[in-house]
Length: 92
Image (cartoon, rainbow, N blue to C red):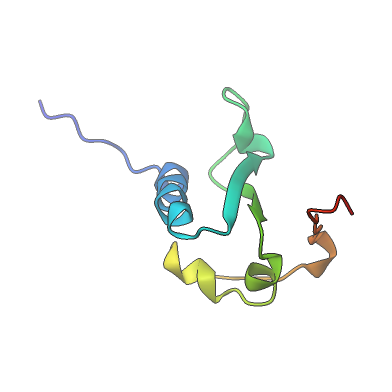
């Protein structure tokens, strides 16, 4: 009997992001938070994947969603500028 790996769209997306991020020197970290961040936590097929992108160039990602297309097909993108929290080298 052959073993067929069931497709896991969230794992596939996480792997795509892990391959994509190192190609950009301005990305410092990507953190998963929310229900999918904790092993053993309950979530269903409709749960989303919450990520925080830490970068030295937030405007590059906040002002345009085209970069998402390098990771996967975009179904919907909503830019939420209320969550941009810049941090500067001088501590401000």
